[in-house]
Image 1 (tube, rainbow, N blue to C red):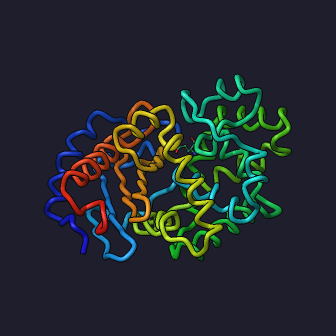
Image 2: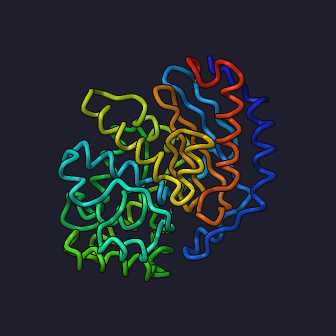
Image 3: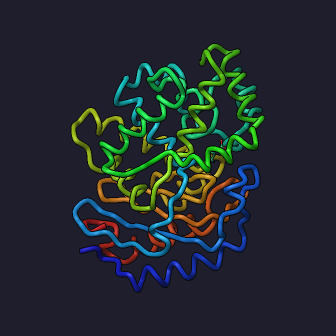
Length: 306
Ligand code: GLN
């Protein structure tokens, strides 16, 4: 049994949602700008126990940057770490997730896989002839191993494409100039497509469980790498402060997703669209902090039971 009950969780959600007025919706992707700021969903899932879920659990959410840890996991599992870390670093960045300045400072070397430059560099490694084929191969792998039903949301993709992101284009171009990718258009289009992979909060939770339940020791090693980088880089410039405050691997996305992994135990997947200055869900992070901190005080929630 989960030691946290729905009543307790509902009370924490109510507190967390008072914070969402401090956030704003992103403006650079029209469909994200039109999101309902009051939408909210959460799933808590542990290895052996039933799920607790509350909110708009059937809503389809674009994963956006929440795909980044799974892009890294896929490439590590398929090609190994030596190959992957020739293309991307493991250093945190104090600059925003889409910083071209950081990439310039580093002469075109993408600091880590959790920021746009790193994920664009890694998107170029996905197997397939076209960006569509690359995204489809990757999506099939995620659905097979994650037991989820992700799909490419073509409406969101159209919305992303309707507002070409010049910053990401400049990042991709810089990666080409530095020799880390060969074709900026394919890499960027692949990146845009995988960011538009979508599913419900349950799909996200199943995906998150890939980082908790390992089929073999090789997989476990790669998951530890992914979780380490989520802890140090998953919330961009805010990563170190949340590593100190919450202390678990977390990945956020501009669509309002926050995915926290409670190592060896389970995951917390949360969705609330209003974002703080760094692009992290305000209510999502507030809630995660409440659950983890209070959970630590109330024996059992985050130990053997969750
Ligand atoms: N596709 C988005 C972008 O490139 C993803 C960023 C995010 O979720 N932080 O800006």
